[in-house]
Length: 97
Image 1 (cartoon, one colour):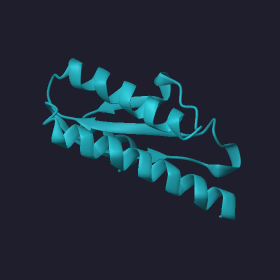
Image 2 (image 1 turned 90 degrees about the vertical axis):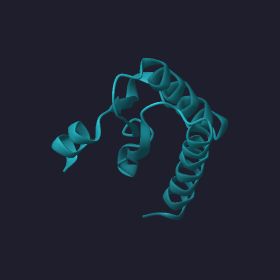
Image 3 (image 1 turned 60 degrees about the vertical axis):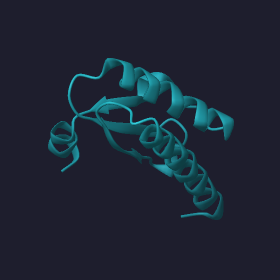
Image 4 (image 1 turned 90 degrees about the horizontal axis):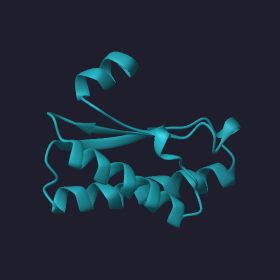
């Protein structure tokens, strides 16, 4: 991993940690955790964020997508909302196990 990739990874992690902390502080219904996948050879087009939400929580999902996109945008890392996905933990494990 190049130095710039390490810097970007740290920015992404910090931004997502902030969103995670805010979601937990708000006791966002259904929110469990979030993570990201990225291939730095194809950055930023390969960046995808996964928010793990249990139950039917459309308001939580909308808040999470908006919060993630804004947090990354504030770091000058563009993430279209269609690359931030909310799924159940079972769905995530089935896809990425």
